[in-house]
Amino acid sequence: MNPRKRLRTMIEQPDHIIQAVGAHNALGAKLVEQNGFDAVWASGFEISTAHAKPDANILTMFEFLEAARQMADATHLPIIADCDTGFGNVNNVIRMVRDYEKAGIAAVCIEDKVFPKMNSFIPGYQSLAPKDEFAAKIRAAKDTQHDPDFVVIARVESLIAGHGMEETLARASAYEEAGADLILIHSKQKDPREIFEFCRHWNSNTPLVIVPTTYPSITLPEMVEHNIKVVIYANQALRAAVKAMNHVLSLLKSSGSLLAIQDDLSPMDQLFEIQGMKEMIQQEERYRKQEVR
Ligand code: SPV
Ligand code: MG
Image 1 (cartoon, rainbow, N blue to C red):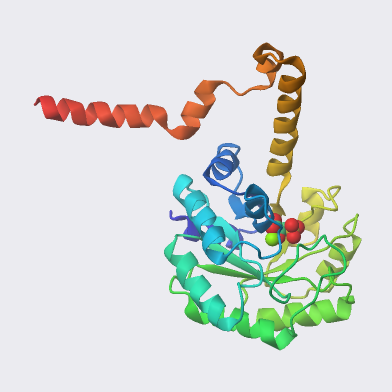
Image 2 (image 1 turned 45 degrees about the vertical axis):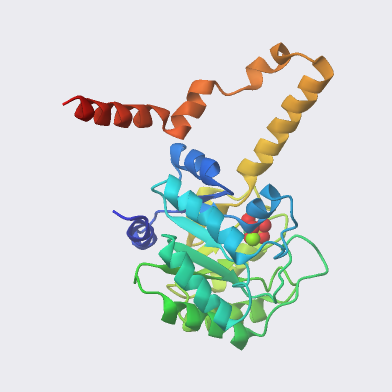
């Protein structure tokens, strides 16, 4: 089954929570797949960090797309691409959907902030786009896609920007009406209470997506209870990698010896396995045999 169909099937499967994990390149995506998750989140935050650039639309669409394309190329998992605000207005969204669909991406997610967006956890810069303007972007995205299985996610930043529940629900409903396949409801609270409140008011069949970065206490049974369909663990793998790399680098610097860090390293064989080295050698041998004949 192709990744888009797989994502659609998982969305329609009752009582299954899709667990997506953030990545910024093929390696990250591959590890997400090897650890049994359902999908990869091509995270704007991760891709920006990997370029040592702020998560604020400093990178261009091409750079985000190229990272997502490499992830799709390296795994069989559906890639859910974080596309910020759609890289501009409706015209940019139309080009974006064409290009992401051609690259084999299963889903795109756009958020209702003004371009250039700012990472949701930086206070003071969270300006929302007018509701109708963003709904038009969702309509443009849905009108542009060719494959009916391609998924468009509308991300509501109204709670992040400090607007009330009423405004937040009105925005989510407008984006649903515009054709969004899923609604991502984002929060920066330290506990999931406002997310639960939103879920209780969400009397609709359009499934919900959450990103519980700031409220890690939420459990999978609580998500089932609140009808949440997709959970995105957006950046934990990268944050773990940065911590592990810093640990090894500081130990190496202070000790001046590779022996001090041996226990902290993945074996080389594991990296060859990620590369697909064995398969490459097997394929070369197959063709070499054909040459001899
Ligand atoms: C990302 O991973 O880029 C996201 C999620 O958009 S968040 O950083 O929580 O806004
Ligand atoms: Mg992002």
